[in-house]
Length: 189
Image (tube, rainbow, N blue to C red; front, side, top):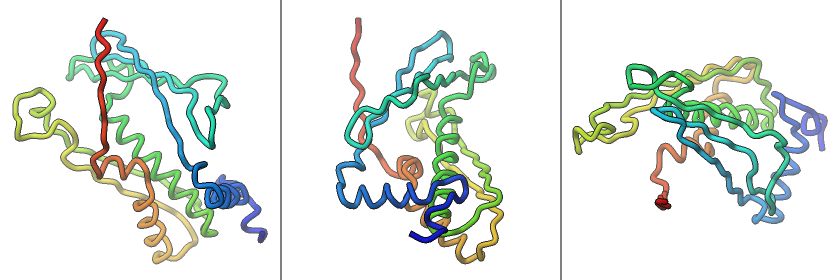
């Protein structure tokens, strides 16, 4: 392993990253993960989601001793109390976060040093769909625009190639761009 591969780049331990890739190539079942979230309605537009354990690398991971708590709410104009971002804002957050991780990790694997990285993201929603006022308007985003700003000593061509690779491998971008089978079970009590 070269010095570049064994060092940390962009805050990523490149040696561990490459070892993870090798382990998954050797045993593809290690790539199967299942993430969990528990959400409780708190009243009005307010909800609280708890995230802690997940399944990965063949077993349930319990490395998080304290759960992550994500508050969700609506702004007052949508009858909420601003206790947290609303769900569609959290989708944008998830997308930008996923792109940032993908960019930093893939840059490190390619030996590209990133000095600064930020994302600006906008999404357009027409409430006619959400409010059930039109069957012609989808309730979700009609359009999402992402601007990636990066400062690096890599060539423009390498950064364009990296950005395209990140888009092709981003789990959240894939979820947003492509239909995902979702089943909802009602447990009425």
